[in-house]
Image 1 (spheres, rainbow, N blue to C red):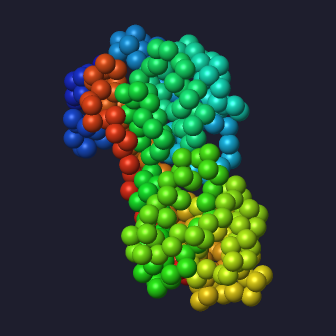
Image 2 (image 1 turned 90 degrees about the vertical axis):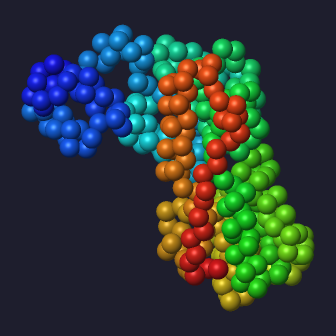
Image 3 (image 1 turned 90 degrees about the horizontal axis):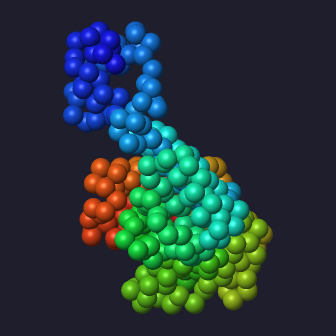
Length: 329
């Protein structure tokens, strides 16, 4: 490090600040230090850094083992944000979020001397399992569920996203607005459904056109057919994009046009949602912003110490979504 400092014409403390991604270094100086690092072939000794700082620079992430888009994208977004902030990520995916599985994952992280942990909790079993584990490390829950003790929480704002979708349909003049909800066991599904119903009530409209799917496209097809049995809606808000795509197939099979007869909105902005026929209007959850928010909360916990959590952090930090208006609504 001293050789890098000499080559760059700065102090070794400045080199340390650059390596630790401190904002207290000007951009020209930062670039000069990185040029000196490249020229000298310097590589950080991670073991020495850990001894000097009592930190490993590793963040643990616990997530249910799933291919669902939301939890998967949240995991990737946290990893990317952590790397940008100078941390590495160790991942534990749990096939079943039992108390023992959660304990084993945290024990594994403790063996790795992780600095802090993010837990992706899309449904109650994950938080329930976490609540059984004593002596938790600095931790942030990625959830729309109830707060876990004093641990900070963050998530994409599900209520704001569902309200954007429902109000957009109302603004288009639709009055029979149906909802295809996801499984009731998921926090996101509950919030989206409740917000759809509340938003319709605010505008004097009935929330009586409800069907439930399992997040798959096939379940959206079946749910849309069920809704049409009671007379087709003129607007449809699906709890995710796959169910919205299935619903559009069912509407087409029934001889209905999207959006002329039924305007359709999904949720997630999954890859391919912009090339459906017609392109799907959807809610983008800003997973990148969520990942950055989670890592920032973890970083604050580490800087302040686990016992110095501000009371305000017991309220979830919600990342604003955006509505991507395309041709389906």
